[in-house]
Amino acid sequence: MKPVAYLLAAMLGVLGLIFVAGAPGQPMRIAVGVVIWVAAGALVWLAMHRVPHSTTTVVQKIDLSGNVHLQDLTCRTCGGSLSDKSVSVRAGAVFVNCEYCGAAYQLEEDPKW
Ligand SMILES: [Zn+2]
Picture (cartoon, rainbow, N blue to C red):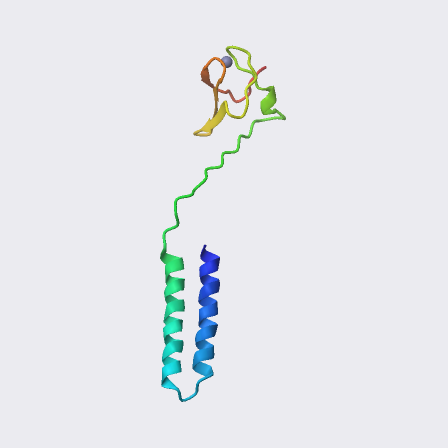
């Protein structure tokens, strides 16, 4: 959204320049050019000050030590294979929430399976 606003402001700036430069001694056209410049300035101000919509996507990267694939993870309680839906990262620790038996526990630093 922001680059579009800046591009539009730049285009308005050029347009205002054309109005002013292309009309020597014509106060009306100069006034129009100034109005366009003000609009361009307002556009830049809006783009800079507008609070962006909260579309923050939290990307959590599960980084397990060693070459451990999520497919190899099995539930400690029921032995069912856990998908990435069952594993979550909270406060830097890996939590397992089994989708089969509902068991929830924290994964240790060096798990043994
Ligand atoms: Zn389970």
